Amino acid sequence: MHRRISSYQPYLLLGVFSALVISVFSKSSPLYPLNDWVDANCFLTTGKSILSGHVLYRDVYEQKGPLLYFLHALAALVSDRSFLGVWLLEILCCFGSALSLWHFAGRPRDARLLLLPGLLTLIFSTTAFASGDSAEELSLPLLAYSLSVALTTPVPDNRHAYRIGMAAGAILWIKYTLCGFYLAYALYIAVFCVIHREFSRLFRLILFFLLGMLTVSVPVLLYFLVNGAVGDLYEVYFLNNITRYSPSAGGARGASRSGLLSTILTFAAQNPVITALIVLGVLYTALRDLRHLPVLLLGLTACLVFVSLGTRPYPYYAFILAAFTLPGYRALTDLAGTLRAPALARTVLSLLLSLLCFSWGWTTSLNTYLLGTDRQAMPQYQFAAIISQNEDATLLNYGFLDGGFYTAAGITPSSRFFCQLNISLPEMTQEMNRSLQEGSTDYVVTRGRRLDSDRYTLVAQSSFPYQSNADRPRSFTYYLYRRTSEDASTSLSMGAH
Image (tube, rainbow, N blue to C red; front, top):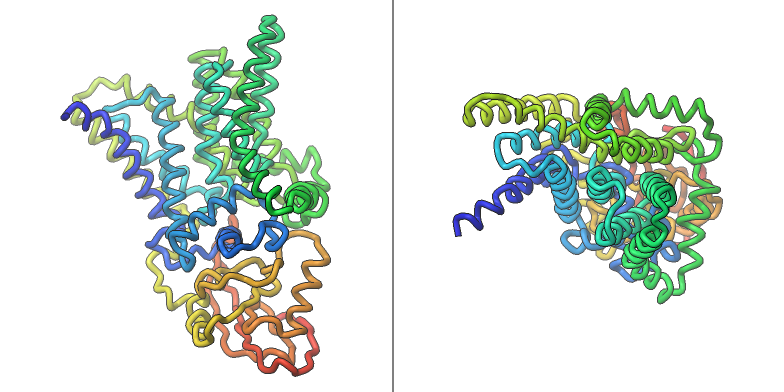
């Protein structure tokens, strides 16, 4: 029995490490009043809409992959007024990433294991981590697993090909621009098998990889097929993202070679710890086993190119690159294993290093300014207290991305376009303006702008700092309007405050 418990100890420690790191550095944690990041709120609001019977893309418009919203629907089952479910989801993702790091490092059970919380802290306190709950974060354990297999056996067996296919399929339906590694890895395997004339092996690997992708894809496609929304899936997730995503918001149009290089250098400068670990890992791989270097370099390059496409990619796009810190962590643990010192001394040293990393992460994280803030200090909860006075109240988040007001008030939006997304879509603006003109919702919330409308009356305003991307927190003023009369005429115009 003691031996059985001992075999589970590393996994328990990895779970504790993951829960600690996410609880401190993600705004989804119960230690924070609310994850006020607009993207995270868009995901959760869409997940709630799915639970309410709205068909994704057809009845509720958001532009990332369906699996991302299905996961947030599960999170909303835990809580539809907070990020409690998302916090648990993030812990699971962090645990999966930590598990791949630990396995790739040779599954150490000594003091070297205690280096892992320090590494996780350094990764999850970077600029790229944003506020927590990005598509990149939820995809990280999938890519980390795939990379750990590729760097252990560059040409996988059938079982691993199937699992990697599942990981690729999941990432495809979360955010397809994160699939660059899999294209490079597939190309590497194909070239390897052709050079060695292993055509039957290549055929089997393709078959098992596709079976893995189908295992994930079939349920997703069935959802849209049953709901008659396959066309909406194609139009919103693929066509509109390629042709209509706003270049000013990081769209694909207008990218250039110089822009690509500039973006990569910016990502590297914004995330020096991840950059240093990747460089260390590349050097270590070149020295330790040169056979694995082509896979690492090809996969890293393809991933960089895909996530860097666009005229202004957001800093959180780079978080998926944390998967490529696996060899760097292996280098650190192997170096620690060469130290000749008593076990107690190595344990103390590992703990001290992790504490130093925690101190560094606490200082550099863009999120910790909000840690421990009282909920009632936030506009979202101040407005929710007013909105709750109306039974079954309806709300429109007008003119900006979802600011968390649906979440705080526990409201599921009634319209397809529930906020202003970063996409050039005339019908979005038209529908939201029509909603204002007709007084379709009981309340309207705006950010940084006042409404000039006979249909709505200003009932509250509040200012609060908001951290966006790589910037330090800046203050926004939010305005809450209540509908005054169903029959009143309206003259709508927007003016800067």
